[in-house]
Image (cartoon, rainbow, N blue to C red; front, side, top):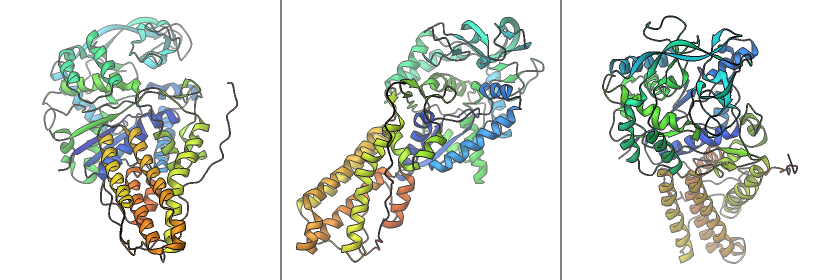
Length: 551
């Protein structure tokens, strides 16, 4: 029985180039997981898109004296190109700027308003007296009241991860002018997140297998009680309100509408397939599974605010109540030389810089081997290069190349027919099958770093088998036994490549052309007599330049 799996991936702000920390934090793990789920036969729908309504976009547009559309077009195009270069297997990568997304956002707003979970309130918000305008959250910076970080944003502190209101900041300052903002009254719609504290607590407590840092962080918010938050702003860039109660100059705010993108992108995908109702198969199906790939700074938005928004529509939308997240395997931070990766602060490599230096599969491998699944993980350009050379090339690439070369040269250029097998032959193949099963279990638990290690351990076991059997010597003394050993080693490689395929899509496609496409998450029997041409190396060894000591 197949399972409909929604792979929901954090929406990158189309405000600047993304870095390798972003790639390792959310996007690459999602693609690896989605690829493996397709291999086991599940129905996967992987969706995301560029977030075009974030205030970082309007901040950059202000800095460059251009329209937000110019910024959005520039970086959305960059993201789409990078995803193609990296082999990302999106079912739908879109934007929050589509008419479809606006319509779905407005429908959710009206449903929640009708349910009584949205109300209008007059409040004091920060106003820039020099620019004479209200300041959205990210137009304000200041000192975090919780940890003392001096450059906290008006919506969240990058240092401690706490969500904030701009008025919480100590010594706030306007990003537009540097002026000290003043408080002025304004009217906005608020989402009554406090309505859902009691409903979300048992939901979170029932989550099995969630990463401890995700569950503990979310439950900590619940213990304090969820606070109502304004979901509109005095801005001209964003989804228009479907009601005119507040008058002109108001828009729905980004962190309310961005998460709705998971639903709107699913519906948009269904329309593109010619079956507009197909999205229900994921969102109104008790057998479905929803897995959200995000960074840890997004935990409150996905473990608390998004479930509250989903619960808030009740059964007022087409199809009834919507499915809540089944798992949120949020990764921690990637750090470079002790600092959190940040494109805006020049810390770490951008994705383009990574692609300039490394083959896509090699970059994918090195990042996956260091996924920050349980704790912040330090990486460097030198470490990436070392992993590629010492692990990917030395363990896997060389194994494939030498076995294929020996088969091509000594077995008439085709998969040989095996003779009588030994206990060592059987043990190797049985071990590969066991490791395939183990890796499958690790994927189900979204332990992607461990599953990669299982695959590489399996590759190493084939190397050890070759060292013990020495087929290069047998070719001179016992050709039949040598061909049996090579058939066994090639059969083991046929299983290992299944485990590594989600991580290495380009080299996996090359092996598909040599050995045939795998039939699923299993080791297929070799086709005796299948042509094996002289191979070319799957990966290139790179020059690793040691980084200078100090800063």
